[in-house]
Length: 112
Length: 115
Image 1 (spheres, rainbow over the protein chains, first blue to last red):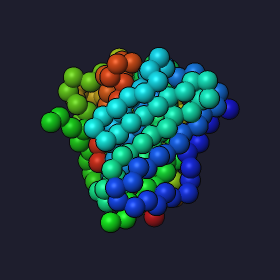
Image 2: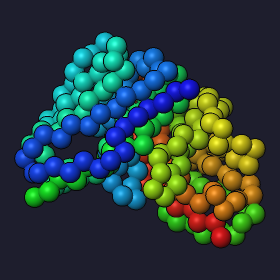
Image 3: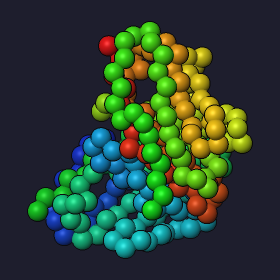
């Protein structure tokens, strides 16, 4: 069966450090992979999309890598800030836009 | 900036009652979705809707659920006879559905409490 696995343990880091979150998947052949941010009680907010032929994508302090051989994506936040504290969700879709499935997310806490 | 709006923000209902949750997607989007999130759990896919019909649905989306786009702007989720386990946050989302801009835009959610 298809699975998306994210580290269920919360990640605690010090302000200014780089946070690295992992997303592993099985039984998917996605054309693209997405990362979202979710704050408590709010809807997910899109951050980045990386396509299968892209190794790396950057947006401001965010960087995503996508290794289709390892079936893994890494999500980095550099120079982290307390405002980056949230749950980060990995999302995949095999169907060309009809059924995006989310991982359980990793909770990030950035301490000042 | 265009956004997805959902009403009501919170609804409390008795078990067995019908509930309709409403969403206004972003106006030029063509793909519409409902997700739910039980407290403390993951965001779960319920259904997608494109070209006035259901495109995909999950095993959660059984005969008690239905979706409709009644007037070209609203997108509704109906639960015919609510159960206690339907208590959750329900998120509507819309998107363009293309690979280049495949991101989903979510509303702020409708919290459903079934007593």
